[in-house]
Length: 102
View (cartoon, helix red, strand yellow):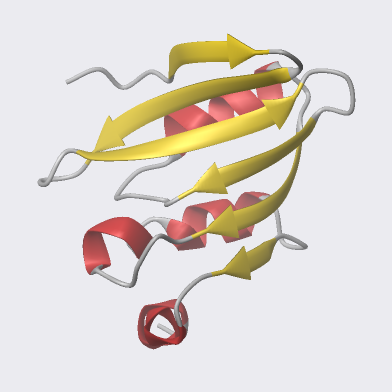
């Protein structure tokens, strides 16, 4: 299993990277606008460190963390994202609050 973010694609002014982490091999995604450098992460997975490293390397401004749903494998590493980006907006299903409050 790679511990690096994998560049996944580019379309017009948007780039996409992903990493895979945890026992369930969850894919976490990072989308960012090439010009504004604003970024959005989709699911934190167990270890979002590769995407956090990419955010620093590319000098991105992570504005939102979105959860596709509230299963533990999707939210487990959210505290790492929050620690690195304390002003981030977290969006997702209300059931995710159970995990986010821990």
